[in-house]
Amino acid sequence: MSRFLDPAESSKPYTDPTPLPADVPKVKELGVTSAPLKSAAFFLGAYCKDYNEDFMLCKAENPDPAHCLKEGRRVTRCAQDLITKLRENCLSEFEKHWNCLENNNQYYPCRKDERVLNKCVFEKLGLVKTIPGTPEGKTPIHEVKNPIYTGVQK
Amino acid sequence: MFGAAGTLLNTSKRLQNQGKPVRHGLDAWDEMMMDRDRRLTGHKRGQAAEPYAPEEFETNSAWYTQRTA
Image 1 (cartoon, rainbow over the protein chains, first blue to last red):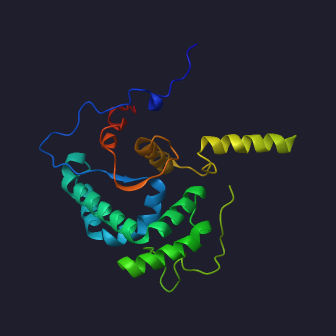
Image 2: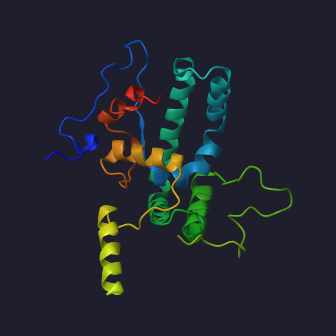
Image 3: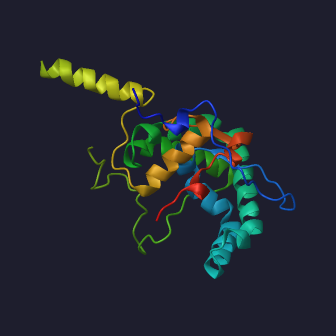
């Protein structure tokens, strides 16, 4: 008789009763979900490095959400810019890669698609995927031809 | 018997996940991202690669009203 009614599926979805005040400049939110974001992550790091670092330093000073709104808006706009450019130039490779990532939870099975995407992004946008913290002298794991550790079995 | 039960379970799980394999090894970050995906697309496995989010996304987060204590 009484069963669990998931609030996420209700006919009146939740809306915030206290939205932002009108004097805060409006910026549209990023509409990218987890898999495309994971695919584009390193390119976001390369393209939006300055804005991301600004935001992180600002948050380190004071974690209050109201303190870093301006830097946050800049990060959002930069990410939107990059996603628009990715879609214009490398849409099919991007879609293939993030569909592969969505079906597997890890990077290893999708290295082939990733190499194709990296090549396209490098040619059209000039962005390179670098993994910070790679030990000196060793090839980064995404460029290793035959890695020792392959995919994790569920 | 085992084959039939296994196939049935696999099909059921795939149907719940929009035809994709079940996500394994989830941590708190992945749970949070899947909740965000549900807010953006309506299903926890739904994906979209648009630069701009729909209007409802900006105000449908229940995080501010959750009580954690």
